[in-house]
Image (tube, rainbow, N blue to C red):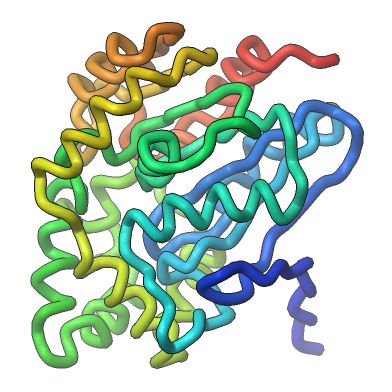
Length: 285
């Protein structure tokens, strides 16, 4: 008998409807942010160690792993999606939120350009920063493929195979330990099967602002004086460790944890260590 697809709650935002997962409860609110061509399942092992003491919310952002296409005329550039994160907090009426981010850099964009009234803390784990958009060699290769006719479909077809997924410069540089096959299959399926999801992904990925704007947004984050935890891998090949160190100096109230034996996807490589760091950083009421 085929597995039934679990129905997730949905919320209508300006660009379109997005799905999300919510463990519920009265504990401190943690909103987990995923990266390009992923969904909230990248956080599965971390959330398992936090709920139900913490209320863990995982929106599926329109970054290529989403199942519901956005409106045809939606603006899906980096600024718009950073502000969409703020709209999500508002629509769910969330307060005293800790945003926990990995890979994508949308939280910094929100802090630079939107309201931070609902944000109490920030956890940045190995993510885009400064002018590293799209990040590293994988980001460069994605840009090349997106600009080539049929390139995105060819890329997604190649990523059906484990050899391509674990190749250097591909997903092999995103995590030291292989992402479970079923999880990665679910990440790539929407863009593989739905041309409108590919359209959304292309809109976002080809909209990177000039480096001068990215650096201006980064420096604007220095005005965020609430607690910030920066967690970075010393061996990361995509998000340089120096960016983690710079971020820890940029925020007035930040501390840095450096982890060995992990690449960018710390929730995959070091979930227990990351979970412990979040528990220490976000006190239970």
